[in-house]
Length: 412
Ligand code: HGY
Ligand code: MN
Ligand code: MN
Image (tube, rainbow, N blue to C red):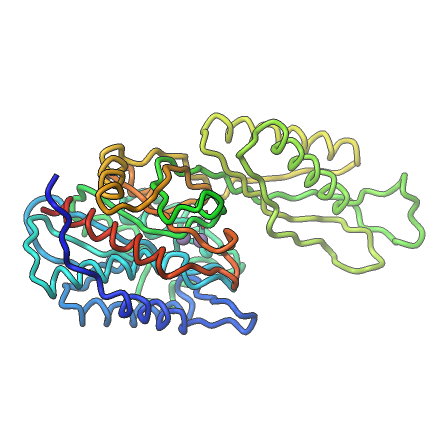
């Protein structure tokens, strides 16, 4: 194995890039709100494109708003990236460290004129967080994995049709559907990301090498009952949609914890109608997000949840409705990339741990068209998708240095 390049990244520049980006989309609740195609996101996009251009890379944007910075070379492209969109009131490291660490790596290769053979690209994929119409809109568009009919009908979680949201951007359904045509052939895709869990912290390791990424199902569900007066309707005559949801929430959680340890289920969004203190709820709409590293387990959980909901509905005189709005399969990362990262960690004397990712990432979409790999660094108390998302800079420095060496190896 060739020796480690002793060129260093400019860590203080990387840190100030992360802080600069974090200043765009500040939420009064203390976090960052930069959902794709929001005003803050459009500002962040312009900021990133200028950064990429100033780094001497060729900047381009495809029809889905995916942003790339490229160094030319021969053969298939080696890509590293992540996303700059965030959840509402999220943290400043989820996604951004992947894009900005990759930018710093390519910037140093350019500055030091390090000879590389393969083309190198940094990427920022649109709407990884699924704030519009399901996770990974950008990386799925990049690979031509979207369904135009669905896209044209999609309503975003803000209740506005996607086509309407696009009107404030330079993109259209057609441009999104055409994005894959600009795609360079990829050999490998690397993504550095915060773990968003507590494994690395518990094991006191600065580096995680991801070998599996969990899949997910996202259903929008409703229990439908009957509105009536809260002061006069005896319990036995009620058709209370909220109680149906409450019953379901506890039972689906207990089932998952007892039957599928390591898999997870979350009800993150709930709307109760008509939403008045003196009216028994006639409708309870809710999101059902469930995750597992096993595709079979996801199927089993899905079947069980639907049967459970129907049983609760018939017991309580309710109706249950549900539709799958997003699904991502679990994937394994490329063994060749896992091995490369392990070898580099040993040479760089970075303690590491191989592990699964419970969160979804663009890497699991890119895995279908390249050798994909992920580097995790710890985040404090495993907190993410929240303003308290924190990292230790020395962990990011190690992770970015590992990414740098991996890119140099793959591109040489
Ligand atoms: O939902 C996820 O796992 C990712 O953060 N989009
Ligand atoms: Mn992310
Ligand atoms: Mn996220």
